[in-house]
Length: 251
Image (tube, rainbow, N blue to C red; front, side, top):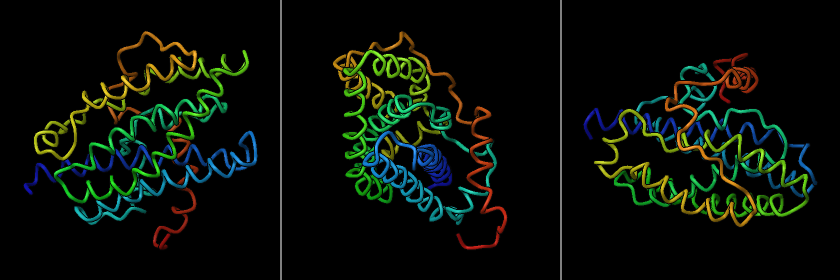
């Protein structure tokens, strides 16, 4: 593997991991606050899965660079993170959280299906291991989208409002990284444009069946994964506080 390809893989792995870590942290904020007890347990497990997936991707980075997952998660500042803005937004209400999770889960499942065929075996192996958990995540959140979209007038209003707010953010999931074309050519990752096409072919009819209207937005809120909101700074301050009290500890 040449150095250019190695660095491109590292940047992609960090982006994948950062998305999972930050979303998992946001999801964990519902622990003890979900609408029903059964959901409190289920969604806490999903949050744990997302963080576990982040550890898998970070561990592949460690194999290539020597950087430990804890170092990457707890000792970088906001400008060094490469997650999309959607995952760093505050959790808002339950409808907002479910819509964000649905849009993300659908995209992630498509990514994983393709990454399972990656020419870089560690990525293919990791994607195959994660896929079954993501199928569960998708089924869980898609059920909630239907429930809210086809429920009461109030639940429909809230889930439609969430879709209106999140659609432009979700489109950032398919913006190529600066060196992504190198990975596509090498067969490490699929073409993000093809992933987006599959994603839209899946979510558009599903959301329509849930009586939801997709906003007329075709461009992401930002095309840069170095451009973050102030919400990420606040989230990291909370998430990293304990680890930074004892930097030499083995967390």
